[in-house]
Image (cartoon, rainbow, N blue to C red; front, top):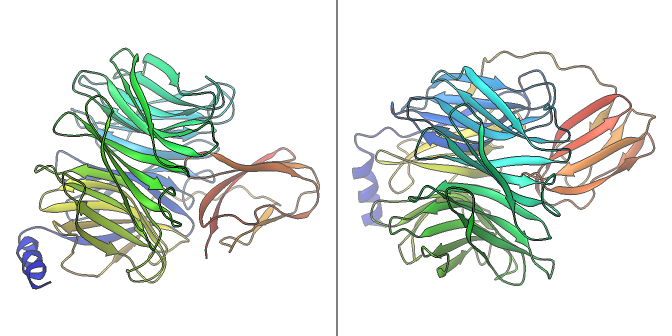
Length: 470
């Protein structure tokens, strides 16, 4: 303990550390952060507090000290979500996510390129008549990008979806991958040979979910595809290309213990498993994102439900080249915090997630810059109500309540049948149905977390973020 404290004090000198919160009076989510060439950071997610609809893409730039340089809203009249962001060679930003404001029907994949100040250069939607969503992206070796997600318009039963786009957003290659059951592409990285590797999940023949990894060549040809996990559900949220030419994936698993655990799988260049680790054992713990360090160690971000300040806390964990535990550090307050993204920064890390302990709304964006061992000089949390333009939402005679709730929701105010779908954070349909009366319960028994309710009542499309607490 003394050695750790001395190391912490030494590493804190000369590098800024800070904790900042951004948002409004409703729901903000954050899904990705990237380090910029000028020393700042770009953060991407969604906002229900600002904009013209129930959810808009929310893009922020922060400087090295965590100060907000600018924030931008991107979206149409429906639901728009930003899931990933990268900086291009000239300082432009590219964002991937999904929208139901597009022309193709249901949800469509959304890709937007902005300049260095967040002004939109072009915006593209991709998909078919069914639901199609993008979750991850990465720069290629030129000025284009690889993107991945899930399509229900191509393939069978929902397939992992990959597009290769050029600098103008034109499609160079598009295809779907997977089985006759549901497959999800959650993360994608460019490989040294000009292809890409994706990770996500696949429903097995037994009905459980397995971690899925697929390697593609530069033309989208499948070189190998493997699944990993046990007899229960397992999934990846992030994949990285390692310094030795292999791959590393993190996510979650229920196969090894009664609780949900962080799942870390190390693969060689041919996709064969080198080792895996499951972290949690006695309390819920999940991994959302990770980076490999110069010495081959790994740092991951997620949450842990025990050992922090209260509720769930952001959890930054460092483990070795063999997967062995090195250190872990929590960040959070009395309520729940979830760490969704991590990026290397000089002298430490920048982590981004959502908070219920701080800020103005139900959930806000929390960004923290730490030292090498996950500490900050001060525990002070600076909260900012973003002054980005706020438009009055359209009026509605439909009420969905209570929100947040402890397990169920009711809808009131429409005498017409209302068709609804409930999706989770990966866009998967959890439940659907038809409401036939004025006050009907729609969500009993839901697991803790945030969901998106898509509801059509009469001639009005409604979209609400629903939050389950415990």
